[in-house]
Image 1 (spheres, rainbow, N blue to C red):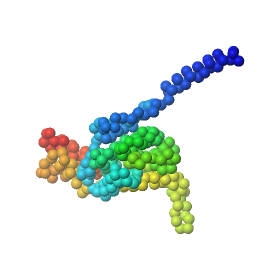
Image 2: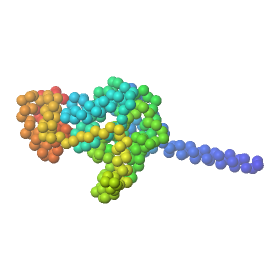
Image 3: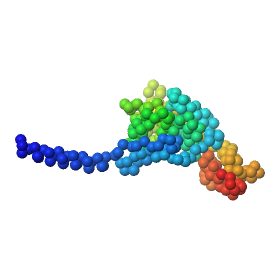
Image 4: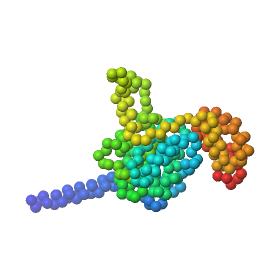
Length: 295
């Protein structure tokens, strides 16, 4: 018995040294940022280390700058207002044509309600596996957090897809009341849809029932309680947005009237009449025609 004691002590010492080396490889728990330093944050992962980074100067936009999306603004504003007032609110999915104001609308909500305690955390698709960690980090905070997933789409069998699905609905750990998810996507159901999947549809008593692959894809988007659809702008709406931004950039009324033809040619070259294209044209035109010193 006395001969085994030194051997056991040496064995335990080796185990302790091994565990110390393993600790260096294990990810450290994320530390909380300075919550008072910003109203917007970004989840940043590098290797096995992750943290919330403050965004000192976030790109905010006024609700008044959003043109021709009045219905979408009204519905998301009502949902966000309920959320910051600690009432029931839904996760929101904003889908549709590119450049039509989906991301800008989410940023506009932060601009309008950050004084009421609203905070935004931007999470990239590749970091969605960390959603449970983010949720636990903010669970006890008094602020109201929007987890913002921009330009979201998945390919088949991506692990991030299941992570988001679990947090939205079905996870054993409840999401706290001070967390909500707003996501934008060009895809209505966040995943590619194939023609072959239509062949899986079944006719049951005269009703069309989608196949299992389609049902699985729909099951994710259905976990968002609020759907907002954005559509391509017509010519008149596009010109309205151009007119708005030229005025914001300090272009005179006379020069705004003369910008119409150039604005249409700009959209023709870009192959799109989106709000983003209108804003880009207005910046170019204002750079050539607005007085110096205007933003």
